[in-house]
Amino acid sequence: MALLRLTKHHGLGNDFLVYLDPDRQAPLTAELARALCDRHTGVGADGLIRLGPGDRGLAGAMELRNADGGAAEISGNGLRCAGQALVEAGVVAPGEMVLATTAGERRLDVGTTDAWGVARVRAGMGRARVLREAPEWVHGDVKSAARVDVGNPHLVLVVADAGAVDVEQRGAPAEASVPGGVNVEFVTPGPGADELTLRTWERGSGETLACGSGSCAAAAAARAWGLVGERVVVRNPGGTLEVTFDGDGAVTLTGPAQLVAVVEVDLERVGAGVGDGGATGGASPGLQGGAPPA
Image (cartoon, rainbow, N blue to C red; front, side, top):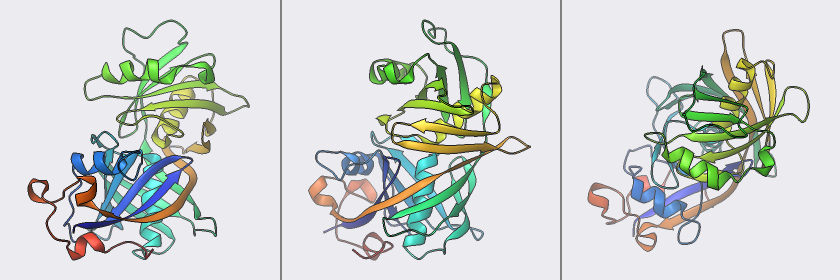
């Protein structure tokens, strides 16, 4: 059997399956992500993360696919979960580390996991580019709109009441309207000063309980519009994240990562082959190792 050991983490309900692949024996395919992330026939998650070996002294290399199998450049919640996974596996000690991602290197500061499985993690997200333009179809109750690049694409829409938005009805066509897809943020200033209320339709996953990169994108756009300052509390449905900006405009995201389970999956049973051609074949040391013991 081809056995793959994973850890399951979440950042405020935005959940990820993570596996360590130090020997590069278990490529992250669209088929694998779809099978494992399926909430009925797989394990269930918003995304699947593969952590390969890091070069030049980096703690690791992060690769991410969304639940639909599509590749994602980066994820703020996923980054924090990846950092916790590396610490819990004993690859690195708690504290500062650097991960390689498709969007570039990202620095993390990972706290110690407590008795509830929670670690506080600070993630450097790079610089957010706010493009003061939006698709022609943006109208109606949208007060302001902007495209934002946080290493992955976002469309930030300011509305009167984010809680009243039908996120699926509006988010799905908005995602499909942009080549390659886009994450869509519905944001309302408040309830307090330097606070935002956010709901997100994530590319390839649908509405999620929290979005780390979306929180950064929303805060960057709101800051450009003069709605918030340098430290922003972003209220996601799953809880709050803190976004801060330094003097050069670099974005830092702070929030929890929680380890909830260690799972060993027989890939033949979920129909998710790995390796050349998707063949499951026999188990290899790289598939069975690299995660905390159950």
